[in-house]
Image 1 (cartoon, rainbow, N blue to C red):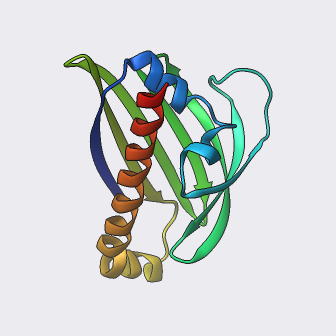
Image 2: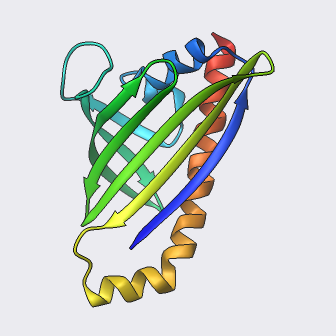
Image 3: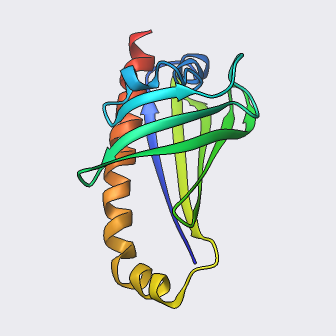
Length: 152
């Protein structure tokens, strides 16, 4: 059972500037208002295998999730993964140059791993509400990434 959503934000900045914002994991708490804290778990530049813990407040609850980069093709795309609470989360960013700027497309997916009958029923009943709230948070993230890239 998978839930996926895709959003696109046009950024008035080059793909390289957008990439600089996306790949600055230590600075993301300063860029994204939804992030409370970042704890780096790996050293070195952004790339496949980069790991960190990200603390966010969602629906009034603060949660810390370990995340990692599973794929990168600078400055065109990157994929970030997380496993939390029986779900496999995938976030993919695609950057494409357009009209002197960049179309930044984010695809976010959540797939339940070995869902129980109760979790299947819960997702059927509340999945759309949860995804709607997630879309709002992701749209805000995209807007804040755009604002940061446009200020570089």
